[in-house]
Amino acid sequence: MKIVITIQGGNDLTAKLDSRFGRCEAFMVVDSDKKEVIEVVPNQEKNAAHGAGVGAAAKVAELGADAVISGRFGPKAASGLKAEKITMYNAPDGKSVEDILDMLEKGEIEEQTMREYR
Image (cartoon, rainbow, N blue to C red; front, side, top):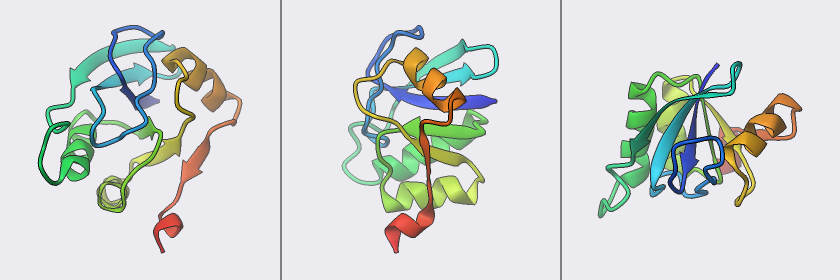
């Protein structure tokens, strides 16, 4: 599965999660089946005055992600991701990408649903 994980920086599986979806430092695109990094893309929206989450959601869709993992998603970003049929997962802050992929494989990361915004 092609997954985008929000990261603080770095270019390998030791990179740490950035819990701020719209204002993360970068997006790491990984193949979760092979546990390989496909690419790292800087988040051009991180300093946007408004709409950082919406812009980040559009970028994740453009990257062709099946799922995205971050610490939290704002309601507008979540709506955009849901519209693109991209599954959202919440991961604990401070974990490495490698740890997060292991947790996902074991079912230890919860899927975020839109009902959290109602």
